[in-house]
Amino acid sequence: MTEENQKIVTRFPPSPTGMMHIGTARTALFNWLFARKHGGKMLFRIEDTDRARHNEKAVTALINATKWLGLDWDGEIVSQYERREHHVSIAQKLLEDGKAWKCYYSQEELEAIRKENGGFKLPRREELESKYTPSQTEEYTVRILGPVEGETTVSDKVQGDVTMQNAELDDFVLLRSDGTPTYMLSVVCDDHDMGVTHVIRGDDHLNNTFRQNVIYDAMCWQKPVYAHVPLILGPDGTKMSKRHGAASVEEYREMGYLPEAMRNYLLRLGWSHGDDEIISDAQAKEWFDLEHIGKSAARFDFDKLENLNAHYIRESDTDALLKECEHFYQKNHNITPNVQAISQIKACADELKSRAKTLIQLTDESAFFAKDVPLNFDEKASTVLSPDALAILGHLEKSFEDCDAFTSLDIQDICKVIAKEYVGGKLGKVAMPLRAALTGTTVSPSVFHVAEILGKEETCNRIRSAITAMQ
Ligand code: GLU
Image (cartoon, rainbow, N blue to C red):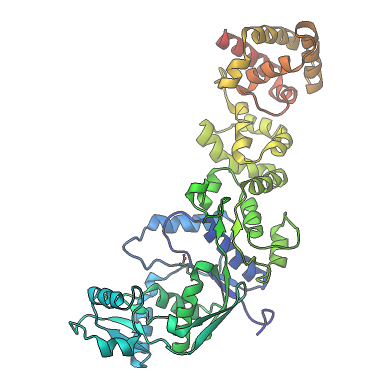
């Protein structure tokens, strides 16, 4: 069947182990795009069978991170754990059909047998039972009765044909001795029951595919199409992790990245459409395919992500952007801009947006609008506000008082006149103290524009306050 006439069903099945790794996010994105492109469905399943390490907070974090990324799913979220009884019934059926067997050896016995057989592999059932007798006949695990001869080929959409000798496989466990199903069993049952047609996941699962196929064959179920995507590496070529700075979606959000930039970046990291770097959602949904997923692992490039973020910040609607910024004004500056500050920030928005690489930068360079005097002067601003600079500010303030229109051009002209009169025409020697006085920092949009937006009264007020504070 071709993708055109088949109803595509993909799935996003994360395990709730903590924050969402960006590799997981990229897998979700690929599944989402593939489903959306073909008018299919993306299902969301939480693989929460590991009860010892289960943590509801991690489930909530996964859902929130998926929503923040802008990915939606079809139907209710499925809990794998809640389907466990069904998984057990499939193992029972395999037992009844003679396609699985009860293994009575204890952990210790299996360890000893493994050791005797060279370390890691167990002999297959026939050999095992003919050579070793278990010490008890009450507790057992249920193991698949896998093929011993021949070979299995997985035609992977990314990796191509991958072949494994069946002798390399093992009779893996379906039900543990406490009766609980394993991941290997649950994932196959769920994918089958949910009608999953395409499994797009990290290539760390490629080996599992051969085992999962044994279950599909034993149950006579149709196998999905597989696409195993290479891992994401850090800039140094090792698996992307905390060591590289930030490895989770939540961390990138906290660093001031926009979800659209993350989507675009993660898409390009591992998939290509010619040389296109900036790809809108609409284009992504139209163009995405499995054939252009890269075969080799991609390295994370922070500069590229930052450039894309800068692009999406510039393109964003200002109101929506300021909504996203609320969190950073609060967290980093302990402020909630009021209506007046918001309208001042908006008056400066084009410049702020064209400068900012992250929302943190945008909030850092505009928070001063929402602050009251006396401002807190950062270290650099304090250095700029030397006694000489304070004298200049005194002159400026007087000239400003006499200026009626107070447009940024008037303000710049006044600064030029003062510069000529006191500092040999060096405009920076006037503009920098003015910036420090108005913003408490040494980085901001054009200080002439900032002064105009603040208005004459507030500008003079901030200058006087700076002089008093630093004298
Ligand atoms: N729950 C698995 C994981 O988070 C995914 C399994 C799969 O995609 O088959 O790695």
